[in-house]
Image 1 (cartoon, rainbow, N blue to C red):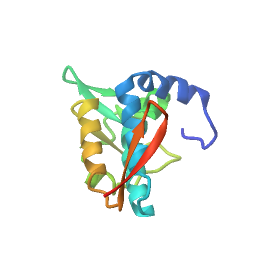
Image 2: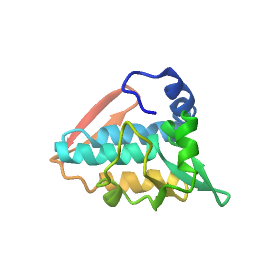
Image 3: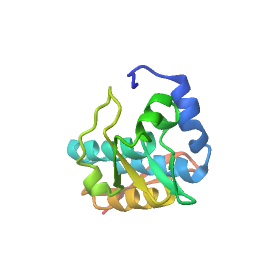
Image 4: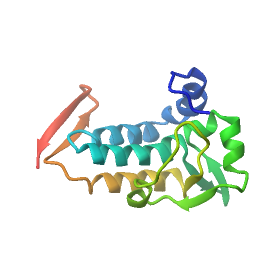
Length: 151
């Protein structure tokens, strides 16, 4: 079950292995950058997409459904519930996923599935490009700074 308190097991078992992969870590950073300078409603929608990927993401590997979301990987109960056959599985589609209601203190009733983590990454990054804002941002890893560019 979800708790609002920091949870070392969740972070270490659920997120650290994937965030050790540079591509996945970049994916997380791109979502953060996409939230800069946008409306509260857009941030809420990005947050829902983040929830259903980074926390409760599922993808296919060798034809089998696999969990990659940190909340799934760090919760035996949620993982068992997810694969119980009593939940709804929907294709990950960010514009639709972003509107999904989701409980934060109970097991999820729906999960979103991508054909791969890379597909989820690309779909979510494409979705971020549709979010209106008056400027663009870029992260410069050489000096660890965010550059703001006028559109």
